[in-house]
Length: 152
Image 1 (spheres, rainbow, N blue to C red):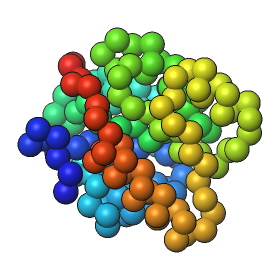
Image 2: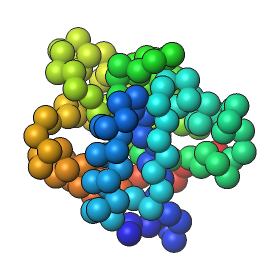
Image 3: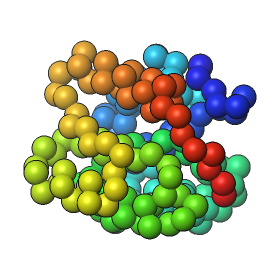
């Protein structure tokens, strides 16, 4: 498994579709690119996780992620709003956020980059392509990319 300074790498997966979430988590684990994957099902849970609120008030249950995989169409708080909050918050703004969505709408792509998404990826429909994409994403963002040190 990939580690950063001896610490396990953490992914926050924000995905309301359980089957998509399971595919992402299984693909990442099979490729051994992430030590810990936290899955939340809506935008409010994502914000609670990142700000250590509600069910995630204990920091041990919500460590700072090394990567956020964020769907756009989410219940409670939309993915674009979650992205905007992350990138406007000093202690979160450097966390890489990859939009992982089924939307290929130009307006979604433009707005995601306007809010400083680090990448925008449209989920392939074919299983084999999807699992390869997850492996490639994991290796790039958690293995090859040189992130800055994040402070809480």
